[in-house]
Length: 282
Image (cartoon, rainbow, N blue to C red):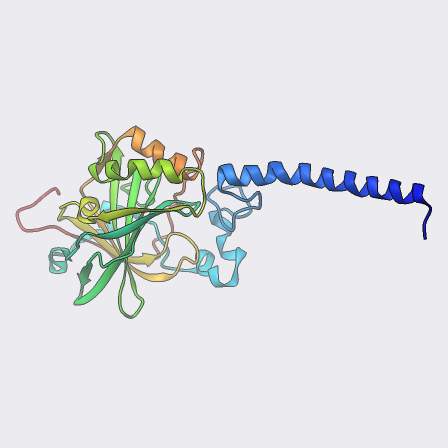
């Protein structure tokens, strides 16, 4: 047995230590609750100078090696000097339909995930079913060196797990009707990583629009693991988004963060453009 005085002192020391640990833990827990983010560094980021920035993605994990060593990486610059007209591509054949959806704050972007059958796009006779859509700001693909304010990616997958992405560019202007319907949910997920909210039925045609002229090339995912063999379709017609809507998207993830990967090397890839007969613009 130890003397009573020593026992009391030991008990008080334990209580003091517990109080110190608790006082340190509470602010951290509150910060995580308020921001939705752990204090730990993200697996990958977009800051060019960071150790987990785009130039280092291929070094972070072995399965992300394509980010650094791939020869068919995206995004690229859609330069007029390398684009060839290919009417044989034909009109973009899609059969989208309204479906139940969930909006998700991934921590890097805002995603609308389709939980029901939202339809598909047909490319070379293969159906690619729409899985989700998300936004990047500023735009990732550039057109003759011009970078627009935002880019939408509609991500599709075939029965054999091949990926096709339809992209839409935006510039600041009038508000976007599709995003307008999502604005209340953007506020609900703001600053809370992995937060999900059911948004009911969403019609993907509102995001796709009705543009008929498009660019086509083979590239990759624009975020890790940067898998290659992705069929890219970038619509030529540029839509508008309001400053307020773009701010809502940025605030939902991180108000100061851009989430666009820099342009990648062409490596002699072909880029085609489809334009219907008699149509010179969009």
